[in-house]
Image (cartoon, rainbow, N blue to C red):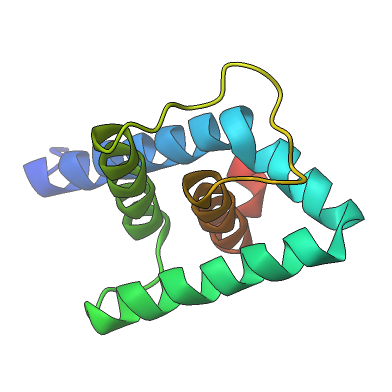
Length: 120
């Protein structure tokens, strides 16, 4: 039995998307959501960012998928780095997260709603 090239590409893309989001979980996603669980203000800001991400993908007529969210996260990170942002090297002070961190946590929160077993 042969596997079409398209199927291999789809599996590879799905694996890469999950890998991107798993890295996001380890860097800021998990700690950001834990902080938000203890801080209603932070949770509200993350929810607002999540709504903006959904609206952005919807405006591009892209369904909310793990792959779309991984691509969005990579775009946010690349644009932020291009403008001088650096990912935190120390534990994040979640009492005053910057825009890129908040957006990345929101992306991770959305991804968990789609694929919670693989991104937890």
